View 1 (cartoon, rainbow, N blue to C red):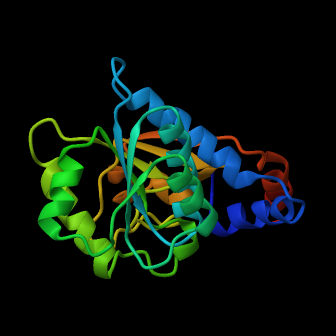
View 2 (cartoon, rainbow, N blue to C red; view 1 turned 60 degrees about the vertical axis):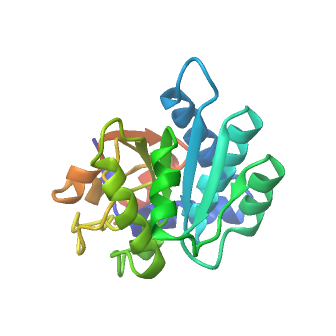
Length: 223
């Protein structure tokens, strides 16, 4: 599998974003499609979104909006005070339930235990300089890790990469990371997802084509 650094992927995205290509919409639609495949076949199912402040969180929110519009019970747990504004509005308009980032640790575990799928949309490739989770985000992930150790744990889907792993070198500076059952990565595989120890957190890797191929080829050819 060909893999690229986070900087190469961002460079490939830049001209498309400047041209108004809806990369986030493409990514969110693909993410929602993959999550739907993991939900129970006999009922709409329930989804918990762990949402950080960046575009990674935006992808999760827009995917959550689509899932909520199809009948799934979607709950949004912010991991910071800031969220992608348009994504938040879309999720709320579709009927998603918004929790407070200050939810108690035991309540976080209860919400996680009661859902079918947990979506890790906390950090993306834009945080490659310092990938370890901190503050409230780390507390939330630590609480949910205890749930994953129990019987019949929810399925974990990572958005682009498991939050807390380095997208380029595969390092994991702090083991407080949600091990994903499925990682849905956008545009191209990031090199770190194939390198231990990060690779141990990735689960099944799904690479979604959002139209970066020609730009990535140009960037690699000019390297």
